[in-house]
Length: 129
Image 1: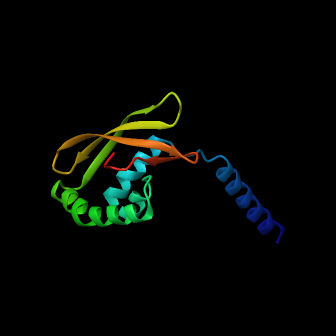
Image 2: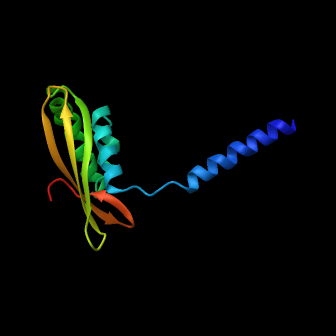
């Protein structure tokens, strides 16, 4: 019985140490998440990375589910991606992440993801800005 209690206590402590050591999301890590969300067709998670109202997010999600999915499928899906560069402004309030996306049909696209800091969290700038 003591052994089981010890094992449970160890698991809890290890879990807590990992939680307390987690780093805040960076523009580069959010960009990687975004590409993976699109790759997986998880447009709800993708639009939640934007600095937009809930109404704007709903419109974006609908657009991505209708047109974005179709475009990604036409290109053979996303085969791979590579974060090339993360530039954060001197004041630490804006950032641009350059990413290279390779599609299943062999096409390669260099894209820039633009971010703004909102309440100490990085959010993508709306597409139309």
